[in-house]
Length: 126
Image (cartoon, rainbow, N blue to C red; front, top):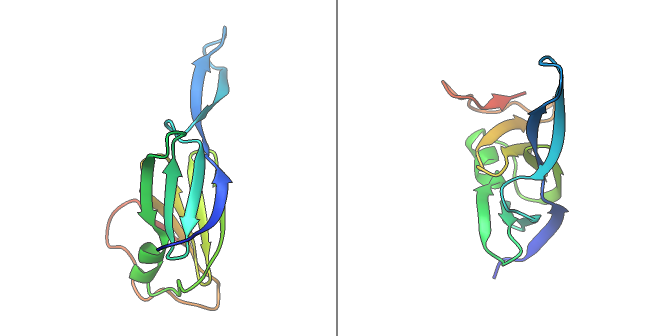
């Protein structure tokens, strides 16, 4: 069995609502989809969960990091930010769009060099 390593609150999504002036916007807090909690297990799989225990997103931070040749042996943290779930691994930090699960960025330490870079797409590797 795979054990949950970290839990975090589900990220909020941006919702915009026009105010009286057309150029002014007011952000409201809404959770990403119907998710209420984020988790990452010992193998680096990041999930968003609903109250009824159904997963609304599952993505592998370890897999994304490994495609760049980054070390992903240990999961060291999980955080959420507006529209993001961010997983810290021993050799990379991977950010996913919530609730869709698309990898948005991979951060690596300055002393390491990813072995490959994406040819096309929207993935950001810094």
